[in-house]
Length: 374
Image 1 (cartoon, rainbow, N blue to C red):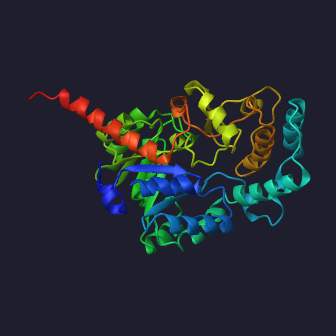
Image 2: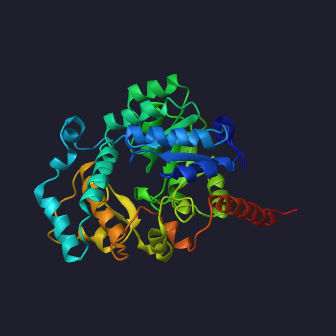
Image 3: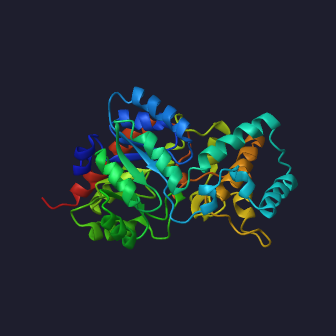
């Protein structure tokens, strides 16, 4: 399964694991894959602590960091010196509070609310171009980071130049072939072709259709990773057959004991069907595939206010999310997850997932070989 991109990055397997959890990043990397830490919800101080810990545990192996550099966002949120919470309209705050009150979800205790509020503001406040630059300044101080991926558009020219100076492989996500063309023009090295099946921010084109379109658009100059709907070794084989040099997986790691989800959250995850992973804007103001719940649907009802721009919608939503988790309300709980969530039914480990996918890959190749005339 070793591909040219593996050779370039120094990993053994073309399995790229996106996770907000440092433990997942470390375990995938140690198992031969390439862990990528989702950094967009961290403050610079938190990110420094996470990367320092990863450096100490990956046994000298390379890993990556994913940041969000949005092209559409609340400009005032980037320039204000005030608490970003003050930029959330009263109408939106009252809508969320009234909804949770009617559902019987208690407010957070004062001390806990202040802590969570601070973490949300510090993290979600970095979902702007300048916020991403602050995170990248931390990232580039860690030489073991060999790839940086921009999740919402091509990195700006100054960021591209900075990454080139540090000899970091530059990646970008795309949901359309025309996005890939813009990324190539900007000079990226790797394009993650993310189909609509994926969790998190995602578009409308299916992975099976998107990947060959992006591969054709990229030619030989840019490596392509397939993302969206990948949790089985046969899907890795299919992705490589489509011309990708690897796969980018996220949802499959949520059910591992290393993931950031607690026992309550995993219980909801294991009960979620494929069709319950829906695309909504409730979490960030941009389209996110997430577990369907009464909270995710509240914003879809008549009379609900319009979604706020990034990062304000995320600040508003995530405090509500914290209240739901504390109250352990399964009917209100939601989390970014792709359609493969329906395949995840019990807790396992990262190492077990890595081993299983490799065995499934080999089985798929054997099936294909039997179709070849001797």
